[in-house]
Length: 292
Image (cartoon, rainbow, N blue to C red):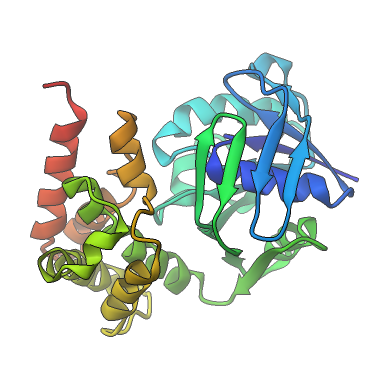
């Protein structure tokens, strides 16, 4: 039985913890800021409820076989405090976060060869601290190789699909193109239905085209038609659905601006690629985080 620590039991972390616990082959402990006496995840096909083991302080933590990190991208320093006790016996860490810099965020805490970046496709919301709603199928993409295979084995027998990608660079930048367009809803404070309007869609197109240009410079294979594919994805969502950037702004929480649109600006600058639309989105969203 694998002992697994899940750091950050939010919407995505809650889904992962529930399915891992549901296998009966894993011993899951949640690393959380607060006690969680129970946890419920409503998936498309079943409801998973369990009473989790919880550590609320890194001083309580002990070594495990795997660490799954599902905190926000800007929480790397706080997350890092958990990693020394959790990885004391050399456990690998799977980073389930937005952006394209998974390894860079945690290289100060764990040897790079033990860091597994994970692309997450899981429409989910957390309406309550102990309740998560999984709106659709969950798919994870990891680099092909022994570490990816070992990670995939943790989810054997669950409804979580894990793909081993021989071209992870393309997979992670494709997801970033999807995330980039979410800034439109966060800026306008309007859910996914806004993408049915041509003016909002055109803003999304401009953001995505810049992201594609930077991703290509990084070696990702991103076709021009990806822009319209992403727009159709948003248009097929329930009109009232919220992406995480939008939800965080509504709740007054910090937003993952730097890991998403900010990454396009920073990496674009390294390649000499102008990204004025994303730069504007970053500055506007950062200004909106500050108290009036």
